[in-house]
Image 1 (cartoon, helix red, strand yellow):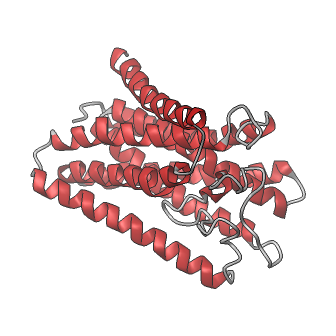
Image 2 (cartoon, one colour):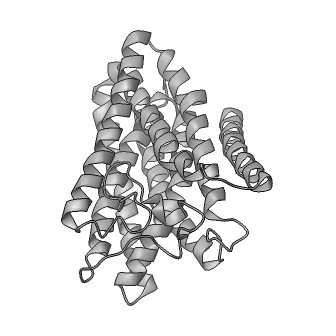
Length: 298
């Protein structure tokens, strides 16, 4: 476990969560400006989703879970925690679907049937990333808001809650090991990019200025820092429970990858398109390995 001075760890958490929270927003805006991430771009939504899924799965199974099981906690208890975490995030997802279905008269569900507006800890509004071959890409968001300018605030509120949770997860990884923290931050950044692309589209539809939309989503992303600082003090007081925090972080990553990202990739495609999906999935896993290797070297 981490033997790095606490002040350094806190600074690392603050910098990592700031880069993750705001960096993912700016990267999403840059990709949209370059015309990437859309169905007609050279890097489409399916590529980004495959990359994100690979990063999350590799981080959870190759790094966070092994680190947790190296601690003094019983394997049975850790597996039970993993199960509880998966069920917890499933219930959050169901609660989000129910909440928005009633609050917006099912208008948020749009054409993709997913109903996400990004307003819980891990309901990522990936309907905007092209759920099916006829579905919308990031520049053709699946959300349909009948009321005046309500969708933007729903997205911002959800982003704030979601980013706060991400900050706690990143802090848990940093408290175990600096290298794990870096991997967790990179993983969160990568999988947040498609999410924020959809958020920016919603905000651009409800705001006259793209700069204002970018500013609002960036401020929501900055809440990641608050989650990171809160996680530092929370986990710092509960060091004996650190393996359980790592397992919960892993359950979050696994749930998002298997329940949210990969289902959007499960569609009938040509052999070439399927191969491209697999390649991007492997690229995501290789990226995690590369980041870990660089962290080990330094």
